[in-house]
Image (cartoon, rainbow, N blue to C red):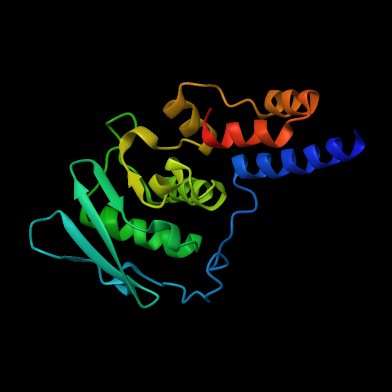
Length: 191
């Protein structure tokens, strides 16, 4: 029983850190690449790919990234590949400088800081969800829209599943039944 309890506690601490944003790799640690820190929005060379004000591209660490803008919504494709918080902030500012997005109250406008927070929540989900999880595929692209402004991973989970995320209860159920990892997997899968 002590072995299960210790394993459960370790997994619980890991899961809690996952939900609060602790332990998320930064500064290129996910890929093992060094980061060439950006100094201004001009460093990425954001440009309109077809002149229509919808399809954009920019360069970051030798790779081309794509973004789309529709009214009040930027989608940044393969955003999980970018983990440096300072660089994320500059990229978000470049997007805002091109097209603003309303805040959740539909009166204010999103800031680079709150967009970075949402981006980090997506990266967190992408990093820790199992490869066969449908949400992981969705989390690889960040969608900056008014609805998710300021939401944590936990709040996004709850808004998408309609269920309260109660890790303590899931850990307790798992330990009592001897099926801790099965219960933890159900939480991760949103069941």
